[in-house]
Amino acid sequence: MKKLNLLVVMVIFLAGVTYGQVNNTSATNNYNYGNAFDVAYEVSFPMGNLNNGAAASWAGTTARYEFNMGRGWAGMITTGYLSFADKNQQSFSAVPLMIGTKLHFVAGWYGMLETGFHFFSSTGSANYTNPTEWGYSIGTGYEIPLGKLLSIDLSTKYQYNTDNLSYWNTRAGLMFKF
Image 1 (tube, rainbow, N blue to C red):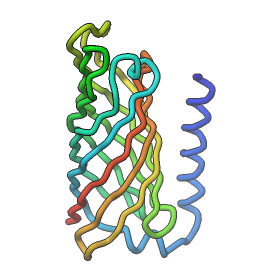
Image 2: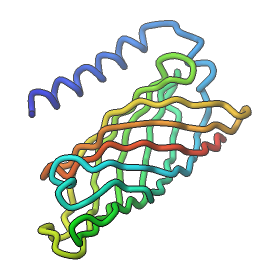
Image 3: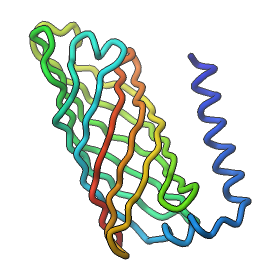
């Protein structure tokens, strides 16, 4: 698993380095803005050990701040609240606190990579004692411009956390650029 993690990080790093060498103005001109803030609704599907005690999440809200790092590349800080449905008299919730990067490859489409912590809490007969888990995510998304300073941001990602408290996530957000 460690070799796979290293491979994923290296591929994303290489993609970012080689992208910086290409003069692709179609992606970079449309997404050079100062900063952005978005609020999103999320749906998460538990995997791994999290699937043992939690069902799909239909109630998740996150906020993300993005800052321009040049030529279609942005840094991100994300936090929010994810509530997973009860399964076997167990209830899980998580508060993610993630930092990451987003790189637009072509107009609208982007890839993203995040790392950070999830603060889990559980009730019922769960075997977890409210752990704080480090993890990372890798995903892709698409921004639909509604105007010069307003977009819809649709994304999907795989979130891996230590102790295999992992989930697949989809996100629909309203992005305000400034």
